[in-house]
Each structure stands twice: as C-alpha cells, then as structure tokens.
Image 1 (cartoon, one colour):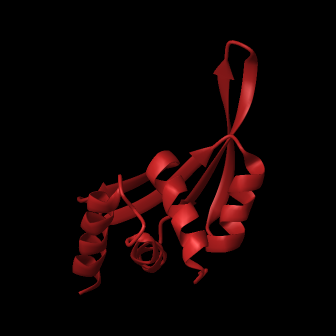
Image 2: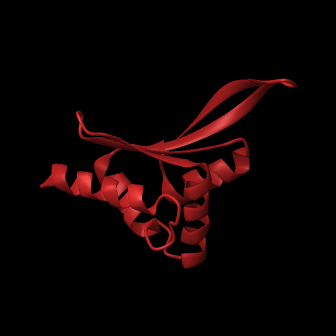
Image 3: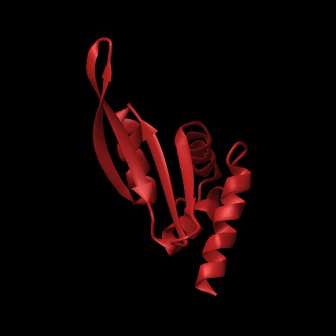
Length: 108
C-alpha cells in the first residue's frame, strides 16, 4: 500500500472516475473494480495496490477494443484500500463509507 499522498490522491481520482464499489448485502460481499482502456495505467495500479487485472474486449464502431478491469474482493483488502483512499475520495466517498461499514459488520 503506498503511503505517498499524491499517489493515493491519484488512485482516488481513478476510483472516483472509473471505479465501482459493489455491495452484495445477501452474500455480505464487497467488490471494488476500476475499468480503463489504458493498460499501462492499470498495470501501475496493480503494482501500487495489488489485486487482479483482467482484459475484456468490447465492440466499437471502429472494431474490438481492449478494456482492462482491476479488482479486489477480499474483505481485508477492500477495507485497507477504501480506508487509505477515504480522505481523497469525492464522488464515491459515501459508497466507500457504506462498504467499510458492511465489512466491519461482517468481521465483528
């Protein structure tokens, strides 16, 4: 986990703009994804935060295009990730707080 506030702020920007926090209440699961077409940015995210990177293809008028999806789903990893980004998140801050609460409830 990086401790540089500039790196954390940049990752929070990726999360706010390209990310998704999914909370599955029935299964009490949390999943965090960031999707982007810029492979070097996504590989950098994996270097900084760990997680898994998947390539999906999607169709455009110009033909198929690669889309990269980074994700973490383990409760502990999601909790650490969201807690580190919380001071920098704007758009996804409320959802991050909700996910942290779910994780802490399940862990209790």
